[in-house]
Image 1 (tube, one colour):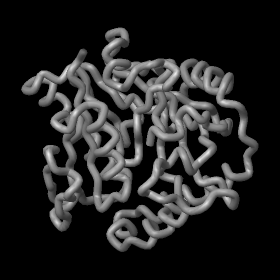
Image 2 (image 1 turned 120 degrees about the vertical axis):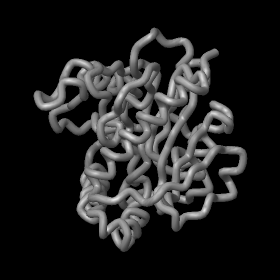
Image 3 (image 1 turned 60 degrees about the horizontal axis):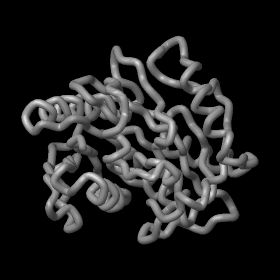
Image 4 (image 1 turned 135 degrees about the horizontal axis):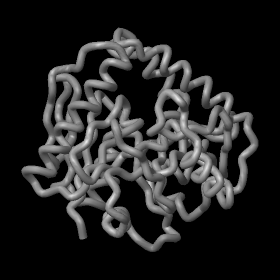
Length: 278
């Protein structure tokens, strides 16, 4: 099987423990690289056995720091391929998890190793949000998918999270520059940024994030949770296949290497087979 490494950068992130546990169990702790954004942070105990680097805090607003982070991670990925023999590198935010459909009968490393030789791979984006008011606040010590029943098939999170050769990610890993994307059947990117609305409110009040312009972004996320809560959920099959086809064919004119659904909102019920994964 191929050597697959995973990267993330975080700042005081509640999701980081889950990210480490998830990818270490599938790729091996030795194949993870964690970067902490800001020298005011301490390396968490749960990162034992993982290479962690504490960086000076990236300066700038949300858009600027997203671009700087993606460029930095692109350079790291290229070095890992050159110096450490990585066949593939995964880069995600700490609240994003590449998941193989359990019906495929393969874990992440085996599944990715079996794919055709494309420059990059995307999982279909599933934005998991708290269903208000039906669902209680999230317990971060338990699997999220055992507490949340619905996901928005959002093209914003259909990201080319995996590269197989040195490439440059765009801001937020939403595209790979000058490269087409391939949305792989059976592969999903679960995003949990809206899994708990109270957490979003706490982030909105964090002074360091407010200074970098995060307030508008977090308020937008809160409104999305409230809006999606009012949308009727559809069956997983065949909706995911239809949305994968749509996102493969439809692209915004300003970014032809990114998927779009042109504002169409499709919320699905997440099947039981995913419930204990994350």
